[in-house]
Amino acid sequence: MITQVVVSFEAATNVMRNKGVAQMSFVEVAGVKVDTRHYIGGQRVASELTYTNTSPIDNSFLGEISRGSKTEADLAVAAAKKAFPAWAALGAAGRGALLLKLAELVEANIEPLSQIETMDNGSLLRSHRRGVMPRVAMNIRFFAEWAMNNLHHEAFETRGHSNNISWDPSGVAVLITPWNAPLMLATWKIGPALASGDTVVLKPAEWTPLSASFFADLTKQAGIPDGVFNVVFGFGREVGADLTAHPDISRISFTGSVPTAKVIAHAAADNLTPCSFELGGKSPLLVFEDADLDLAAELAVEQYDNAGQVCLSGTRLLVHENVADAFEEKFRERASKLKQGDPRDPETDIGPQIHKVHFDRIKGFVDRARAEGQSIVMGGEPNAELDGLYFKPTLVRNPAAGSEIVTAEVFGPVLCMQSFSSDAEAIAMANGTEFGLAAVVVSGNRAHADSITKELVAGTIWVNCFFVRDLRAPFGGSKKSGVGREGGNWSFDFYADVKNTVVSPNGWKE
Ligand code: ADP
Image (spheres, helix red, strand yellow):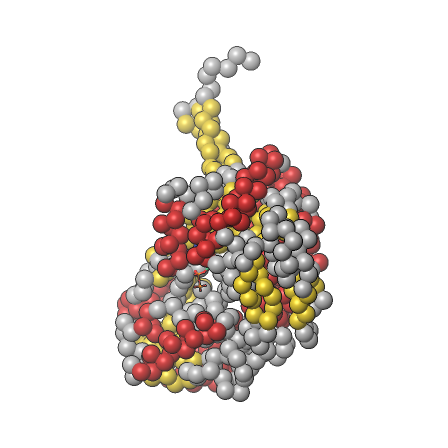
């Protein structure tokens, strides 16, 4: 357990510019040093400017992080471009050997990675240890092995000609990632991008730079050649904008909000850079009359996981009117047992929100809903027993159709509950937003559940379960929730240049 965060003031010794400028180059978390400078071309690079990174747990100072600009964006893309031919030429097996080594190093560092991530983004330490960081290793291993063993297409012929389909490396992939599950979501992209033979420039979210920095050190230890993997820190509208508008990149993969995706799409347009977007949601969790209500209540309470900062959360509880009261009672009974507090405490179920700015955003949604006269039957305010960014798990009952609280993504521990009286009404309500990321269906009857899932517009639907994620399966959003899918071949279809070589049976001399 972390007892303190020590910040060491060290002179930057390995800077590519601003030589001699004293920088706070490291933050120490749980006895592990994490570099606060960019990782470009295998070296640490300090920016002239920095920004302050604090912990959401207690607002303690974590470090001054290098604040990237166009200079660092150009340096990183140039380093990745230079490293590309040799990395591409290694082939899936050559790259795979190094990526498997990287996965092993992640596994060997689950404890420091978990401590760093919890300190930086406030998610539960026990989840990082048990689930998230092992999955980070799995993300790397899975895509390395997929590229080596599974990346092939069924051979077919056209009038005697054979079609030979290959996935060729495409160039430099820019990856822009969010703060809610920083390393987990980054490695969904890093894994397939590197396995494809692309080189990478990662820009993690400004509020959560540390796990990416530590991960960069692991890539070095794994023997991944300099320039193949680069990390640039800084603000989205600054270095993020410079990276996504860069003419020398081949792919942009982004996870974040819809408004930011639109800005990135504009930036990419000039170069026609292909984009993959995994965006927000306002997913429904449908509870039918034939549902096991205990299971439904349990699944609904899970939607508060990660303090509600999960794009996939089923934040709209749509419950058949005949079971609404019974469901609500069970739900509230379970929700009342959730323990809110320090995410390093193994007893804690809900930690803090990521940042004061985001905390205020969530509070703003709830305050406006209250001012509009919506009925807030649970929570609805900061937890007065805890100092800081802890917002109580909240339930808004029967919000007015079309109101902000039931249409906008709050990205906090705020659920809305509405009732329906028929399947047709449930489907119309479920599909009635601009999003289409996920849906949860709770029903005790298979034929009934099937008839509902067929009608729902969403990238992933969970029936009587939540968050079961297999990397072989496609993942992504419909409507405004995304562009493209990640997982299995879908990831490689994006990062690689898919090529078909058609070979004639004629003209051969041998
Ligand atoms: P939030 O507002 O909740 O932080 P965003 O979608 O804005 O969500 O952020 C997700 C990621 O997108 C972060 O890494 C952020 O720095 C980055 N980002 C924000 N704006 C831009 C932009 N204009 N260009 C590129 N990246 C951006």
